[in-house]
Image (cartoon, rainbow over all chains, first blue to last red; front, side, top):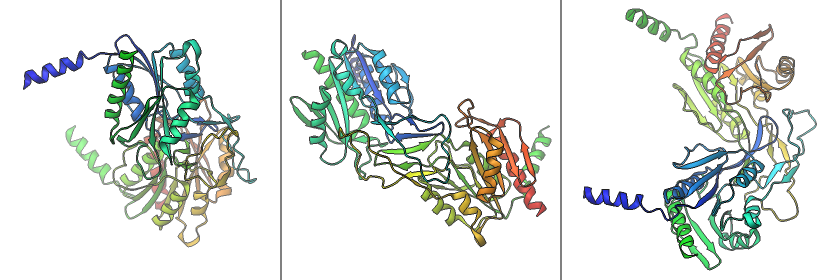
Length: 233
Length: 233
């Protein structure tokens, strides 16, 4: 049994189908400043994105992980680039190219505050301030349409409420990415911050609905799918 | 030396000038939801508020700590009530009365999002949504003007940029609290999230400017000031 375990360990350690491949993974939330003390955030824990970065590295890929603020340790074997805002994340992603595969798992803020203040906003008795928003760059669409610098395989995430598969399928076409990993973040589910995930992998060839499993297991299965993709192209 | 250390320990352990007193402390940020995944937050770590709760408990007070989301362990000897929003914090504070002293160290959001959505806001191509804000309840002013239920000593915090003492002195009068602990949270300082704090204690009798010291030391000195206050009234 000990021999079997050691053999399994070395078999696993020798399973490096992504050796020589470069991977870019985004993870976590972005924080968009309102003023020096306030910001807009989201409930992404970074668990799924960090797990994917670690799983790709275990399969031999050279991984750059561009991550917003999380409470997570750096996954082993990854070069981690910490950022706060969506614009910083885009710049870090562009600096990490070229890459063979990009997995955009971060929950990037769609909007930032237009003209964030460098002084703390005060209550002045005149009622709440208007918070004007501006659209952030779309990192997934930018990577998907990056021309010569486009990664061969671009994978997006969709955190949806409502009709998850239909919405995410439309998102895949709109963004120009190859795959979408769709999950349901309705109030009744605990995907944000939780250990488990229930996802649908949406490709041109169709939809695979995976059973609920740990985020590490989702990451391992996705990393194997990435490896299989590169073995068949 | 061992005998001295033991004696010092028991001397310290026996220093309970706040025994029989009830204290209410608020700490941390509040999170104000925009939709199921997004929220407005602030950079308060909760370190100063949690340290004050612990310091009051060490002096013998029965402490209720009402805290927004932080990464901190519960301070020993405190009853901790976790909340997310300003409105939840006010309700928890009111439920914790009566108290002899209230220390409002939380960085309460001045504004919440009016009509937060129970579905994720989507980019619809029509430009960013308008984010309408509504004023949150003012917990410090509410406790300071609570009539019969007002704690005998109400201490507020002021996180200011610019002319810190003047702004905080005006805040003391406006809120109706007894003391204000004022600190500078300009971009160049590291008060938010850092281990140290540089504060001014503003009372009716005048301003004490304390040297920069650890947040635990600020907490211990403030707790002793609270104890001294009750010994002289």
